[in-house]
Image (cartoon, rainbow, N blue to C red):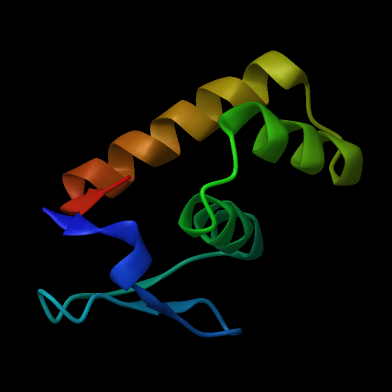
Length: 79
């Protein structure tokens, strides 16, 4: 599995995994989370940051965040 720190991320949402050659396109929120994970920010810190900017219930965001981590894992990206 490839480490999240190795990913190349563009401002437009294009993500490249140089280890596998795979590419992905992510939305603004996913990019924000991905960059925060690359910077080793704590999960709670990431969630609080997103809660401040978006109109979303905390429990829903926690579920979405967990789902996103699962999706990254399924793509072979280790966090």
